[in-house]
Image: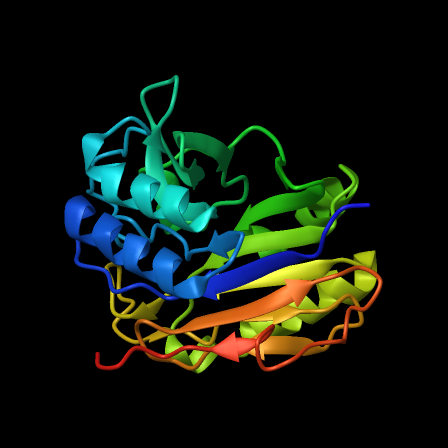
Length: 254
């Protein structure tokens, strides 16, 4: 029998284009999260900056994050632009653990502005951790019913997404998470960008969360940079939790 899985959603600080500083911020939150899986927002490693260079999974600036994952025994699902075979970049999810980083998923459903720089990914994708299957998504993917259906068809336990919304749209990912959770009987973990970033996102919503298969949000972060929300996922007891299992961990200062 597979063990329960501790999942966290994190809202790191982000400096536009400063890959090294952002990787260090991710590493700090991995250490604080104390979770087997830590989900990060869309393009969290670089900021939502269309002119930022693509990230190479073997870049040595990822070393602090790899080391943090090794020490914590964590898998970090990180947002970053990556290079594509046709010369165009993709908005992607990197899976980072103590052995290194790899491209795990490329965003399939792009916003209109994103198509000027990025190409859509080819297919849904799953990462397996300790016998739990995590279907991956990035922002607009979560609002496309076909994406949820295609990803759920891969046999997932958790739908894990990195998203970015402005503060007035803070309720959007809550509505989408509930729809996906109850529609497919899966857990949903959404990490939402906090603070400010490029392309007009001056006040990102934050408010990351984790939803049980019945649609109830069992862990929630606030709007602040540095917040982490954490829950223990157990298919047998989706609502059972304790102060140790579910926590909101805001930063000491922002």
